[in-house]
Length: 151
Image 1 (tube, rainbow, N blue to C red):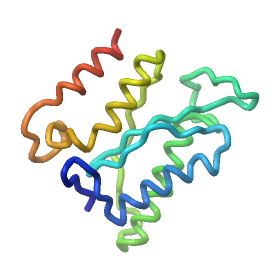
Image 2 (image 1 turned 30 degrees about the vertical axis):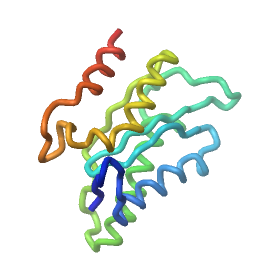
Image 3 (image 1 turned 90 degrees about the vertical axis):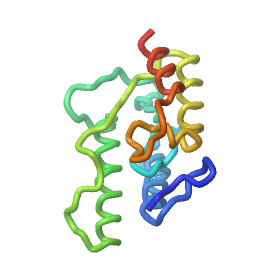
Image 4 (image 1 turned 90 degrees about the horizontal axis):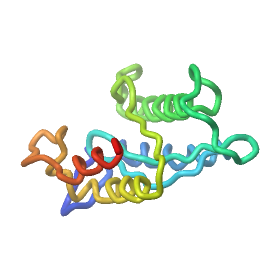
Protein backbone atom coordinates (compact mmCIF):
# COMPACT_ATOMS: atom_id res chain seq x y z
CA UNK A 1 0.00 0.00 0.00
CA UNK A 2 1.22 3.51 -0.79
CA UNK A 3 2.24 5.50 2.26
CA UNK A 4 3.72 8.80 3.29
CA UNK A 5 6.96 8.56 5.27
CA UNK A 6 8.52 11.74 6.63
CA UNK A 7 6.46 13.84 4.21
CA UNK A 8 7.51 11.82 1.14
CA UNK A 9 5.49 9.32 -0.88
CA UNK A 10 6.64 5.72 -0.86
CA UNK A 11 4.86 3.99 -3.72
CA UNK A 12 3.66 0.41 -3.58
CA UNK A 13 3.64 -1.74 -6.70
CA UNK A 14 0.12 -0.39 -7.38
CA UNK A 15 1.27 3.20 -6.94
CA UNK A 16 4.12 2.56 -9.37
CA UNK A 17 1.57 1.35 -11.93
CA UNK A 18 -0.39 4.59 -11.51
CA UNK A 19 2.81 6.62 -11.91
CA UNK A 20 3.93 4.65 -14.99
CA UNK A 21 0.57 4.96 -16.72
CA UNK A 22 0.32 8.69 -15.96
CA UNK A 23 3.65 9.26 -17.68
CA UNK A 24 2.68 6.90 -20.49
CA UNK A 25 -0.33 9.15 -21.19
CA UNK A 26 1.87 11.80 -22.83
CA UNK A 27 3.72 9.18 -24.87
CA UNK A 28 0.44 7.83 -26.28
CA UNK A 29 -1.10 11.26 -26.87
CA UNK A 30 1.20 13.85 -28.46
CA UNK A 31 -1.38 16.59 -27.79
CA UNK A 32 -1.00 16.08 -24.00
CA UNK A 33 1.73 17.68 -21.91
CA UNK A 34 2.11 16.62 -18.29
CA UNK A 35 2.79 19.05 -15.47
CA UNK A 36 2.85 18.60 -11.67
CA UNK A 37 1.67 15.18 -10.48
CA UNK A 38 1.63 13.13 -7.29
CA UNK A 39 0.30 9.72 -6.29
CA UNK A 40 -1.14 9.76 -2.76
CA UNK A 41 -2.29 6.80 -0.64
CA UNK A 42 -5.93 7.24 -1.68
CA UNK A 43 -5.95 9.67 -4.62
CA UNK A 44 -3.82 11.43 -7.23
CA UNK A 45 -3.35 15.05 -8.28
CA UNK A 46 -2.16 16.07 -11.72
CA UNK A 47 -2.13 18.87 -14.24
CA UNK A 48 -2.61 18.09 -17.94
CA UNK A 49 -2.19 20.51 -20.83
CA UNK A 50 -4.33 19.51 -23.82
CA UNK A 51 -3.62 21.10 -27.19
CA UNK A 52 -5.66 21.08 -30.38
CA UNK A 53 -4.37 19.56 -33.61
CA UNK A 54 -2.75 22.89 -34.59
CA UNK A 55 -1.33 23.61 -31.14
CA UNK A 56 -4.16 25.91 -30.02
CA UNK A 57 -5.89 25.16 -26.73
CA UNK A 58 -9.20 23.39 -27.27
CA UNK A 59 -12.36 24.93 -25.90
CA UNK A 60 -13.53 23.05 -22.79
CA UNK A 61 -15.66 21.54 -21.52
CA UNK A 62 -16.36 19.47 -24.64
CA UNK A 63 -19.77 18.00 -25.35
CA UNK A 64 -19.85 14.29 -24.50
CA UNK A 65 -16.71 12.23 -24.36
CA UNK A 66 -15.02 13.41 -27.54
CA UNK A 67 -11.76 11.86 -28.72
CA UNK A 68 -8.88 13.75 -27.13
CA UNK A 69 -11.10 15.22 -24.40
CA UNK A 70 -10.20 15.22 -20.74
CA UNK A 71 -12.91 12.62 -20.10
CA UNK A 72 -11.43 10.29 -22.71
CA UNK A 73 -7.90 10.73 -21.38
CA UNK A 74 -8.89 10.16 -17.74
CA UNK A 75 -11.16 7.24 -18.65
CA UNK A 76 -8.41 5.48 -20.61
CA UNK A 77 -5.87 6.12 -17.85
CA UNK A 78 -8.16 4.74 -15.14
CA UNK A 79 -9.11 1.75 -17.28
CA UNK A 80 -5.50 0.70 -17.97
CA UNK A 81 -4.48 1.21 -14.33
CA UNK A 82 -7.47 -0.82 -13.13
CA UNK A 83 -6.73 -3.65 -15.56
CA UNK A 84 -3.05 -3.84 -14.57
CA UNK A 85 -3.70 -3.68 -10.82
CA UNK A 86 -6.48 -6.27 -10.99
CA UNK A 87 -4.29 -8.62 -13.03
CA UNK A 88 -1.53 -8.24 -10.44
CA UNK A 89 -3.79 -8.93 -7.47
CA UNK A 90 -6.01 -11.52 -9.21
CA UNK A 91 -9.24 -9.53 -8.81
CA UNK A 92 -10.43 -9.07 -12.39
CA UNK A 93 -13.32 -6.62 -12.63
CA UNK A 94 -12.89 -5.18 -9.11
CA UNK A 95 -13.14 -1.38 -8.82
CA UNK A 96 -9.95 0.56 -8.18
CA UNK A 97 -11.10 4.18 -8.62
CA UNK A 98 -14.00 6.29 -7.47
CA UNK A 99 -16.65 6.65 -10.18
CA UNK A 100 -15.74 10.13 -11.44
CA UNK A 101 -12.96 12.69 -11.01
CA UNK A 102 -12.56 16.33 -10.02
CA UNK A 103 -11.44 18.78 -12.66
CA UNK A 104 -10.68 22.46 -12.75
CA UNK A 105 -9.72 24.72 -15.64
CA UNK A 106 -6.68 26.74 -14.60
CA UNK A 107 -7.30 30.30 -15.72
CA UNK A 108 -4.31 32.30 -14.49
CA UNK A 109 -0.59 32.05 -13.87
CA UNK A 110 -1.24 32.71 -10.16
CA UNK A 111 -3.66 29.78 -9.97
CA UNK A 112 -1.25 27.54 -11.91
CA UNK A 113 1.59 28.28 -9.50
CA UNK A 114 -0.66 27.75 -6.45
CA UNK A 115 -1.97 24.43 -7.78
CA UNK A 116 1.53 23.22 -8.66
CA UNK A 117 2.71 24.06 -5.14
CA UNK A 118 -0.33 22.35 -3.63
CA UNK A 119 0.37 19.17 -5.62
CA UNK A 120 4.07 19.10 -4.83
CA UNK A 121 3.45 19.73 -1.10
CA UNK A 122 0.58 17.24 -0.83
CA UNK A 123 2.59 14.37 0.72
CA UNK A 124 3.95 16.66 3.45
CA UNK A 125 0.35 17.66 4.31
CA UNK A 126 -1.07 14.12 4.21
CA UNK A 127 -1.75 14.25 7.96
CA UNK A 128 -4.25 17.08 7.24
CA UNK A 129 -6.02 15.44 4.28
CA UNK A 130 -9.75 15.22 4.95
CA UNK A 131 -9.83 11.70 3.50
CA UNK A 132 -6.89 10.47 5.58
CA UNK A 133 -8.28 7.98 8.10
CA UNK A 134 -6.18 9.51 10.89
CA UNK A 135 -6.20 13.20 9.89
CA UNK A 136 -5.19 15.49 12.73
CA UNK A 137 -6.89 18.65 11.47
CA UNK A 138 -7.91 20.68 8.45
CA UNK A 139 -5.50 21.74 5.71
CA UNK A 140 -5.27 25.55 5.57
CA UNK A 141 -3.40 25.40 2.23
CA UNK A 142 -6.28 23.48 0.64
CA UNK A 143 -8.78 26.02 1.96
CA UNK A 144 -6.69 28.94 0.66
CA UNK A 145 -6.30 27.29 -2.75
CA UNK A 146 -10.04 26.78 -3.17
CA UNK A 147 -10.67 30.39 -2.17
CA UNK A 148 -8.15 31.55 -4.80
CA UNK A 149 -9.79 29.40 -7.47
CA UNK A 150 -13.24 30.82 -6.70
CA UNK A 151 -12.00 34.39 -7.29
